[in-house]
Image (tube, rainbow, N blue to C red; front, side):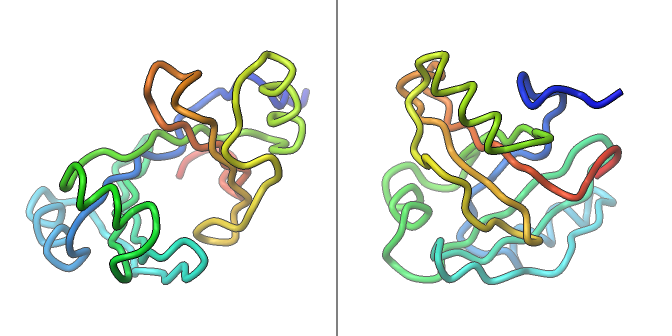
Length: 143
């Protein structure tokens, strides 16, 4: 039995803005967690590294420069939780269903995310102020 595109059935990851992935990695490693290698996402203006936590993952986001949404977030709010990401089976169908439900979309069509995933963001004005990312990934059970 295939699961429907909507609603999402699991949290894929929490996005956390950091000044330095290297510094933040040291903290998570002291907790006994594994931090994967950083990946540069030039279209988003960030480097991203994932912390493996068992049932979900944490995405550490370091801005590449002073431009882009992550750099603006860091300048305005400092380090901290940026978004929550939900795994969806079919991101195009999930976006269509969100649109039909009246949810404002930041991304009307999917774009490339870390690890060659397809991602799209829902606007916080319709999600109780929380930035929501939808992720269609190759992860099907455990992260």
